[in-house]
Image (cartoon, rainbow, N blue to C red; front, side):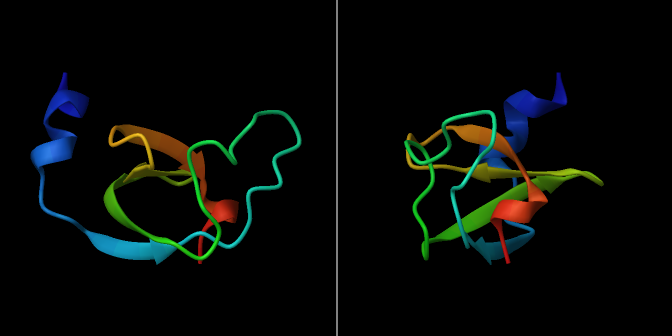
Length: 65
């Protein structure tokens, strides 16, 4: 269960949220446009960051720059 150690893992890089216009899910509650987030893990489709709740969340790469 590798995802349990992501919060304590070193930051890979930082990304800036560009929008929260989600077609299916409500993202504006956990991401803020213009705020920088620490990337803890990354896949081809998702970026895992520490969001506004203080927990790790996986989001589509389209939300970030």
